[in-house]
Image 1 (spheres, helix red, strand yellow):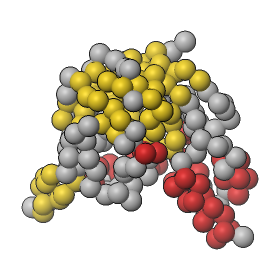
Image 2 (cartoon, helix red, strand yellow; image 1 turned 90 degrees about the horizontal axis):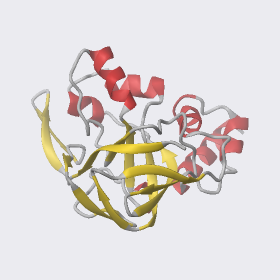
Image 3 (cartoon, helix red, strand yellow; image 1 turned 90 degrees about the vertical axis):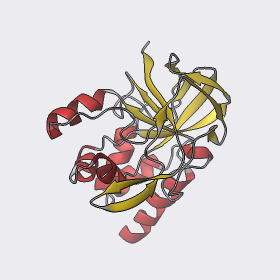
Image 4 (cartoon, helix red, strand yellow; image 1 turned 180 degrees about the vertical axis):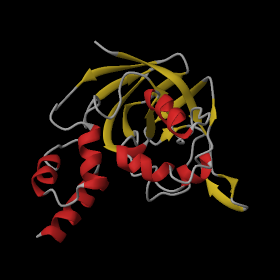
Length: 215
């Protein structure tokens, strides 16, 4: 059984950074911590700026796979360190391809469940000072994903990320994200994804609206 390691545990609230001589307000600039309390609403001390894409009980934890960092560094010929994507958890072993919507993991003393992929925004490009970053994330669907908290607990930088249960193994995070970002006319795929009970309400609504446009 795969057991992921936490590479970086990070939290932080909204603050400003400079991009092309402009001040940008965002909570993407999180800082690494040794330990944090995870509640149903997210990590104590953490926050979001754009509530349309972040925050809420179904997006309490943002996870980004450590495996992608090497790819991005090689592609952009730049040093990119966690948490470059504003993630709370940068961890190993569970990428978008082998994490499934509904997967339940232990994370330190807490228990969390995958609810959706991430819809990335231009803040990622701006924060990392790489103009094409957003478009490449969308093209690859290497977005990371969100989890809700089933059991509260303490998480540390030494915690593991271990799969406890997999309610379904048909739709990975990558599958669902690809349809969301690149294939919103794929009626059969969206109908299949909508059958997943554990899918976040926000994504259920997005798929339903996309289906209405097709019909």
